[in-house]
Length: 171
Image 1: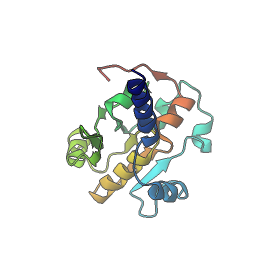
Image 2 (image 1 turned 90 degrees about the vertical axis):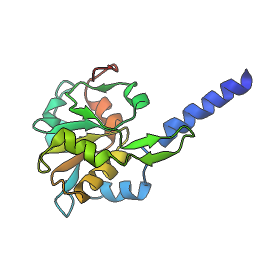
Image 3 (image 1 turned 60 degrees about the vertical axis):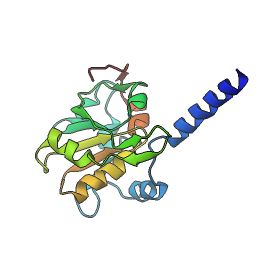
């Protein structure tokens, strides 16, 4: 019984440390690049920027107004809560295999295309801490999407700034 409890604690810790996954180098380079990146195709939304700083807890929709807002977190992450704003769709960027290994969803770009349609439409991605959403934004940009952003700090920052709601199957 003690071994099972210890395993559960260790597994929970490893899952929480894994966060969004991704390379820490790509996150650091993104954090040092304010606004849209040099190629103008994708960028980060920093909720501490002056244009968002004055928003109240009920005003998260102003951040995503006029965009397609896509949650790329996995189901177990969404069960912790979700933005109150309308999420267009849920598309997993990474897929976890039964052994716990993560791999990129090979259909991600196609699934986004089905939801978004126009490659020039503004897309905002959110994951848990923004590593995955940054890499997903870059992938979409490399595949011709021209107006892609991620929320810097992901759901962790979003939930500290704006109201969130409990998990809903009908998301």
